[in-house]
Length: 459
Image 1 (tube, rainbow, N blue to C red):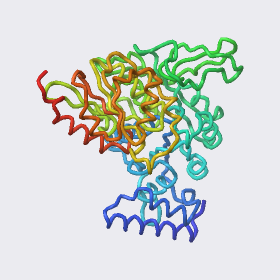
Image 2: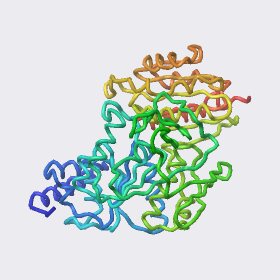
Image 3: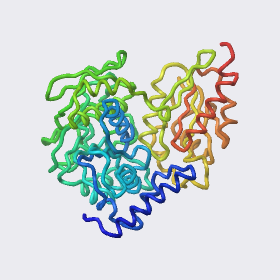
Image 4: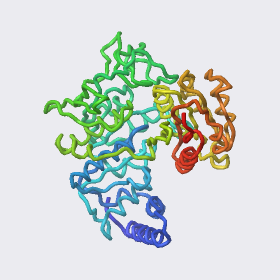
């Protein structure tokens, strides 16, 4: 699209907005882009783009994959633009384009990495066409916004430009079916010690063959519908991967990824299944961008997992406090966190800060997502106590009881700090599961617990 007077007025106004926000000490990561789009609705289309645009989308993992890719690029001295400090919807990407351009809009860098919200596709892809697009996976998410996984699939399938090359998860039968006309590569994990042959989760959104509607045979089940499938009645099967992770060694925290140039070893950053997938996804994308295995290894070696997503501290008496992100309104992310807690060693107590900002004035009445979430994973003999807090603690309490968790193991109340004061002394590990709006509260709870009798009393 050509630039016109309206575009330049919007660009100038957005720059003035960004400057004003900076002067008063606010980041304003979306506001400049919001004003630009209000004043010029097709602003993103008219804004000059870097020569190469990489997009990262999907229900879960897109932020982690984007951060991994950007950190590897930084470690290798490759300059790029990104929306890491802003939102992943159209206003955030507009702000990122403005911030990474010269005064009249010329890009400062030839490469851009954009995390792109899948629900915002109709507002993004008509104006910005990624050269390469990763889709990590497609799952149920916030039902008030994303409805159902197939609804999001249909949006992406319609909106993704036909010229975009796709990097897709061969172990996700839903997202791997996107845009069959597009050029594509697939990635997969060959074997994990935790592999199953039946789904333990409440939700499996891909039980039937998309060709003949016969029940699919699940050769490997990782979680929900992630795994390897085939149809016993037709030729449908999981696609053959171009990037295959093999020999995943949790003790050594390494894996081998086979590609067209042979096998190459890469470090793992975390032993959870979803984070193994995140690293494989990032490696596949970086290889498609032209980086060598050595460049990728060098970058991954220097990366640490963000403490806003996972962290662990030991107390003076040898117990552990673990922070673990579990997105509110997202049954898949919460189920993964619950399964990780169940599989952890020792006796455990859990605090759930999942009440969506812990403020009834800002949250939603809709609690249906709790019944898509595998609370049943918390019905385990190793879990001594479950602390449920927030404005809607009775809703969570009801769900826990329906999962079969004994009432005598549950403490539920509005005040998180008061609940923490009742922490079970028999627990070796205290898991604090929180959503993004509860990070500061989770940190306060950790500091309070570190000075408590539970953490300091000699066993």
